[in-house]
Length: 113
Length: 112
Image 1 (cartoon, each protein chain N blue to C red):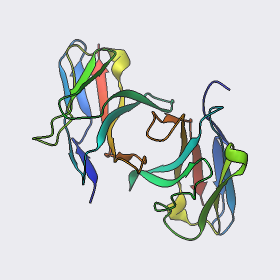
Image 2 (image 1 turned 180 degrees about the vertical axis):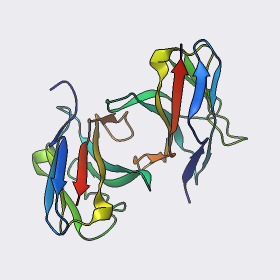
Image 3 (image 1 turned 120 degrees about the vertical axis):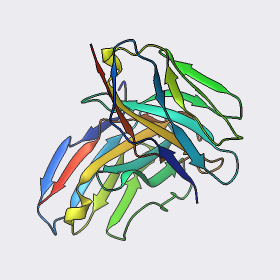
Image 4 (image 1 turned 180 degrees about the horizontal axis):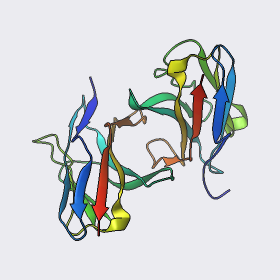
């Protein structure tokens, strides 16, 4: 594809449910990032995948958050037992190489009721 | 810790006015600095970047100079257009970490 794609574009869920957010990076990009954009916290880093290296999970806010990247391409961010404070726009970005320009997807807007 | 501070918005200007959006940073080591822009209904896009002191990033008439002595990376444009209306984010990344640390964003509104 031409750019980073994310699905779904919008997700409404009830408190306590699990959600999965998907990211398709630009083909050939080795690095993949997840960020969260919320009213209270601004734009914050969540997790970073680079090739076959262990991911940098230092930004995950709690153990309810996890992410995986299968086959070095598609990534899924999972939030278990969602809380209202998880409501935010979740952004995915990819770059051709470490320290390269990050290209962002359109985001998934998550609303937890 | 590492952080980015940028001016509160919204910034409201008339078309063809001069724009400055201030950005200062705190970082251990020598960061790369970025300005990203988010147009209404669109995703974040890289506007410009600078990777070392005294570098000037430029794109679409926007400029920013990496000032190590004042730890700043202010965004400027000589003559704004209505189409520049967007939210602008200043960000840094540190060597060997690659993750971006963003400021809170500044909304720019340009009126004809």
